[in-house]
Image (tube, rainbow, N blue to C red; front, top):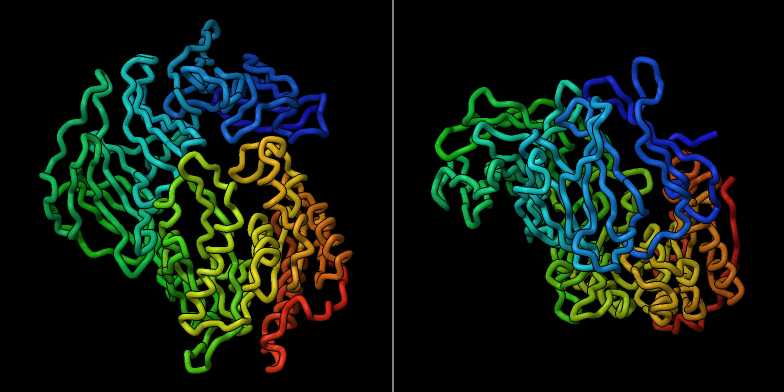
Amino acid sequence: ACMLSSYKDSPDGKFLLFEYHERPFSRQVLYNRFPLVVKVLRMADGEEERGIERLPLAEKIPIGRDARRSGGRGHVWRADKPSTLYWFEAQDNGDPKVEVPHRDIAYTLDIADKDSKPVEILRTEWRLQGTTWCDDEVALVRESEWKTRRVRLWQFNPSTRTKHTRPLLEYSMDDMYNHPGSASTRLTRENTLLMRRDAKGRAFFSGTGGSEAGDRPFLHLRPLFDPATAGQPEEESGAAGAERSDGLEFTTETNAAGVRIWRCEEGAYEATSLIVEGEDSAHVTILTSRETKVDPPNMWERRVALDPGPDVPAPKQVTFFPHPQPSLLGVRKELIKYQRDDGMELSGMLYLPPGYDEAQGPIPTILWAYPREYKNASSASQVKGSPHRFVRVPPTSPLMFLVRGIAVLDNPAMPIVGEDGQEENDNFLPQLVASAEAAVKELRRRGVCDERVGVGGHSYGGFMAANLLAHSDTFRVGVGRSGAYNRLLTPFGFQSEERTLWEAPDAYLAMSPFMHADKIQRPLLLIHGEADNNPGTFPMQSERFYQALKGLGKECRLVLLPLESHSYAAKENVLHMLCEIDDWLQTHLVPKPAPEAAGSDASAREPAKVEEVEAK
């Protein structure tokens, strides 16, 4: 008996790459560490053509975000070849702490040639992440190093193996303002994806286009090196700063800066969905998805000039989808910016209920957030998302409560920064509390909320909510969904934390709201999928935290959703979850406090009845 992992036919349709897990299975590790067999079968008769890899059970893998199992990984067909396999292997036994000149080596193998052997074509200093193929002379490979949050993009010539490899880009994975985007691809007749280039050999790159005003997606043309010599890219047509008919500027700050041929206009959010081959070498047609706060996403057709000079026709709308949730037409959405006490710039997306009027005064408000770790303050303070995205409400979104008259500050920045040799979580709690209190301070300055402020989140956001109730008196109520509340149960790291419990016991203890349950004085609702198989958020996390709160006489409630994993899917469970949160907020957040109780000490309040409910 075996467990199928994946299968994929070769571009020429003659072979099948077949991967499966075989016994012995294990209860100690995830299934992707089970013994793995990789082989190639013939499509004609289903018989084995070649055995590629047989990896043993991997119960011992080094700790760290860049850790990998030993042996070959990432087996795929080369997109530019009929039947050539491509994969890479760690040279440090999968341990990022081992000092080696090269972390990974990439290999290819021509399956059609029965006598062929694996051929080394590339070595990377950091961990190899992925490859974009073009042809036998041009390909792009991406490597990254988690501890520095750096990414490199290399251009290499597959036909010359390790020769003629040149760095094309290096950037921070956290810096969205300067992120170059990723290479665009085109679908071939063989159902493979190859890098898209124009008539001059320049590669198309598309990205989210982070900026202080929010995301403004873009399309970029980037010159590549001469594949024969890896020499410098040819000089760009058009001088730096040359004006285009569409108002954009061509720039040539570096030898591979390229040209930005299109960018989303201000006042809307528009992203490239498909690049269509142009009728000539001077233009390209693109299909974009365009939306505003009140207009749902619709497809538009645009003609874009590849070089300065040619005029382009006006864009044409292709689809006309109506508003899917008319009851939300009156929702107000705004990107707000504010400062933390230490001067760090923060932002969040504020949603106000339909029909809200400043004259009615403060209204109940909930913050729904998810902390993020950064290596520097400049990246941490960048604006995330776009204020011009259509107001859509997914089934499990906190925006559901807008129709109940509750304001929502969605995804307010909760950056946890580690600089000057410090780890991010060395100062987790002070930074978390400072960010949350700065957000509430700004909401009160705007007159949006009073003392009726709640906090909630999912997974690490639920963990955040419990910590804020334990270490801050700013919030009146909390909601934690599928969280991990005792870091001693995740002793080998979590999120961006790579240190073990035994290496950083103080950080693990300080960050665990379970260890500070006695400090929680506000009502806390815990919700968890009963079948949550996410390694860091087993249902035990909520069950034990609930028992601790109940034993301490705290106001709390536990809801277990049957058959649900880390994310909730069943309609009955999603509706039950929304009903539980709504009841909790209507009971503990919405009512205004009695005048005589407004200034009372939270710790003096009589605890309400502690109860547990399981969804049926």
